[in-house]
Length: 74
Image (cartoon, rainbow, N blue to C red; front, side, top):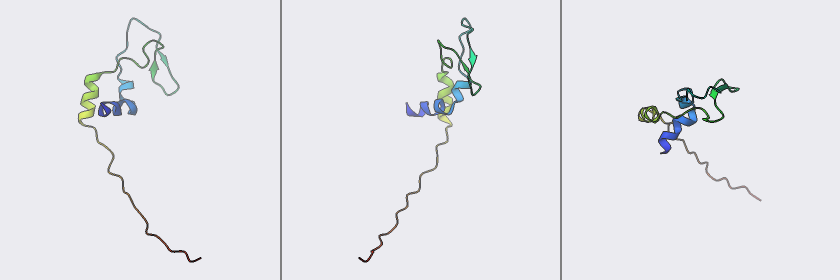
C-alpha cells in the first residue's frame, strides 16, 4: 500500500484525477491545481497509480558514517 501512496505524495495523481462533470465548482488553488470542495482533487486513478508504482524509482540507499572516539585529557 505504501508503494501506491508515493505517487500521490509526488502530485502526479493530482494532475490526472478524474473530475465529476456534474459539479462544475472546480477552482484553481494557489499552486495551479484544480480543487473542488466536494471531491478534493478528483477521483484517484487506481490503474494509473499501479502503473506508476511498477516503474517507480526509489531513492538510493543512505550512507551511514560514524566517527571514531577521541580521548580528551582532563
